[in-house]
Image 1: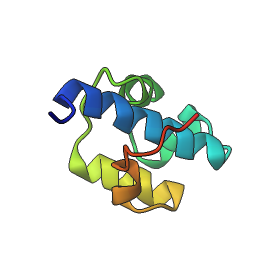
Image 2: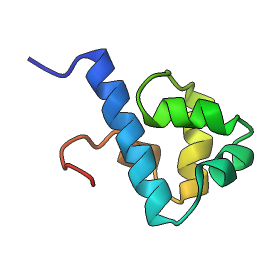
Image 3: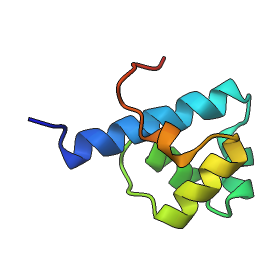
Image 4: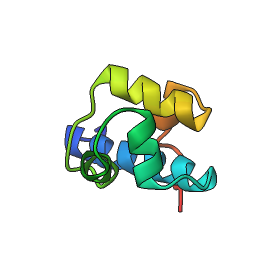
Length: 78
């Protein structure tokens, strides 16, 4: 059986964190670029909040990656 919604939301948050750190961008910097609060971004990264598609697209664009990269749950990221 596949992953639950909660598991996917958690892994999406891990991927956002991974790519943000790889670009050496703080939560505050990324949040400002996509016009959300750093608290909301923190909750997204921890898998506590669901993110809308427009915000997700902005996050990917500012990280210089495709939206699909954020949904690549096959490889564990540290």
